[in-house]
Image (cartoon, rainbow, N blue to C red):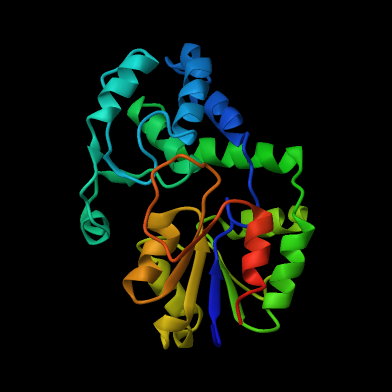
Length: 264
């Protein structure tokens, strides 16, 4: 690998959190008709992450489900999978969601239950992020050191859909505040991923074959780069789920750190 440009996602990529879904779902249903469903929704989310229910890394139709219980919700959502939809088709579709990571799964469930109408989606997201920050986060020292070594050999960019203040606070808490010289927040991936890179520096796209995009959400992080001829590394924390297309795959932060040391 020569003269690489390595693009990192933030959430689920340079840190992993396996329990935040509980706080998200608690906040999601609080004060709504679905509040009694909280425990069942937690179990459903964990079944999805384990590959026992629905299909992560597939496209699904969006919209309110006529369901008063979690079993009814599951029955309705099973019928909405779009296994043959392509990346290009999905970019043009307004009523489609890709279950590419835990955040996408949780938001899809909330949307189907009618609990994320209006500004509530942003509010639930904001409150969950705040809970995560208050609980404290601890970064992986080995990964931090691998990123610092990588920046001596390659151009490294952190590209996140999160707001700038969230990105910088998470990096601070993780102990990664000095790990990325180039940061692009509110990147609007996947639709705005290429435009965000172009705005950061047009030279980033001059050699698509030199790009490596690293992330856990294939639609957001991998497919836009793959579509222009770049390579991808998929972070998969959920063994047993449906796999998207990728160039390489790792499952843990330790495996990611080891992979970074092979890039030059």
